[in-house]
Length: 461
Image 1 (cartoon, helix red, strand yellow):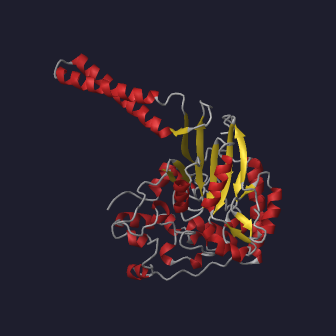
Image 2: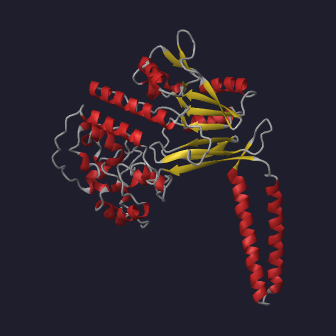
Image 3: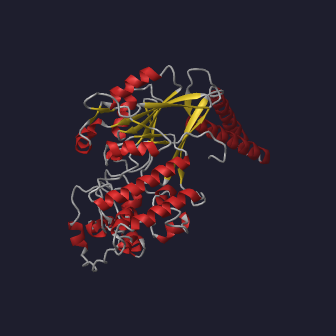
């Protein structure tokens, strides 16, 4: 994007420093290495604003304050305050100007996290995020062309925020338990969030042609749909005229259809005229491609982190082979209220797919890392098990419930609870889903089409 000369504003919704509580000194030291890597990488990429999430405070406010000194970008939070003085810890917002557009960026956290916050940093508290956003929006509206929220509220509260504060121009969502990308408009406020494992780069592309204040943007999909419809009408009209020129048969009927199409074409053209000299925005979820070259400086930092992190742990002796359970015993292990139900449950309707899957590397993915150092197991389990981080976070392979070992159906198609009745399964596995784990360094030979064939997943019953 930078090479294309686009004016970029790189933002992060927060919770990017620490993933979960650090229970040992070794994990704490490993986290320090990782945080340094992240800050250096963000500096190198040119990030401009980062919201504070509760996980960024896992090592305490003093630590986060020290980290901000290393960052070339500000951390913001509008509703995180000192309980005693009632003053904000970080700047509530930042204003940036791009292409003569003034953009106010507000950071928000979910006040339901106050209980957790008291355990981490008792001197802090969170104000109501919606009330806070309204107060800031009222102050910023006259001086800003766009007001953007970096949110750690979760899906339902993002929607509530949009309903109660329609003056916002964009909500970039984080937090909560989102399992996939969400792109929606609530009360005409666009809300965008990405599946949180890094398979996609989220891009909001604004096209500005009219700078008259107040600046308004329309969603480009409305215009795009009209243009596609017009193209179909024109194509059909050309086809009918060609048929009429070749044959006299049914000419009267063709003339009637042609007149109808031409009237619809004029109608769509009139509607499109209303979009002239308008500003548009569109959202693009860009799959991370292998063709994107690694940055040499950042890769040196990554290799340094891996080398230093490996020194902190001793290799773990491989576990003895597990006793194989019968299908009945496997099904009995699955909790009735579990969000994930395991491939053994999918077998009931998709036996061919299940048997194909058993022959793949996906089925044995957890076992391939049992002899890795303990730190590596914890890192690798995100991609080498099913449901990690969504129904549990395991430190080693031994801790994974047996019905979730390996890369199973639900890793790609989503949680199976309620399926096939009220549950929702993603039938088509997109490139971005694969990219969450098949990254350039971990899977350099990855080919989307070829790998889909390898996992033996065909839609059959």
